[in-house]
Image (cartoon, rainbow, N blue to C red):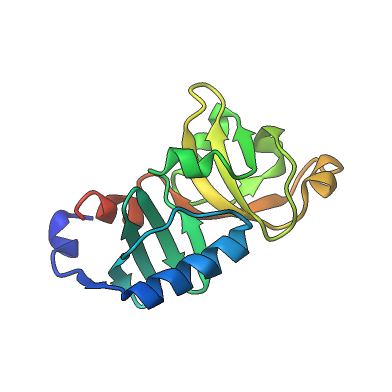
Length: 164
């Protein structure tokens, strides 16, 4: 992607009412308190995706799914996570789902929960996914998909966010 692709990104400012409505919705979905933000700016990436930006706050919205943006380390740290081995990194950064054999460590998570994907050497956030099963079920597995990869380093949302 080049900066040119995102030059005409449509943007609008949510009203205070819309902002508090969306923050309540996200806070319920994530079961977390979110900072009070007066206004959120919405950057429309395409028909199904928007990047929501507020003061110290960036979230990716894919259809009805809200995903903490990979630049938001403090927020990401509050979510469950899996640590993947270095062999899985290049696959994650190409959008692959997380497979059981690549997972080295994990915290507890439930099915359909937002889970962060961390690489084992630098412990950096690589991707954010949604769990397809819960962690106790995963522990019984030796193969198969565990997380659906929704947002990863170098995806188009990551690249666009550098321009906004």
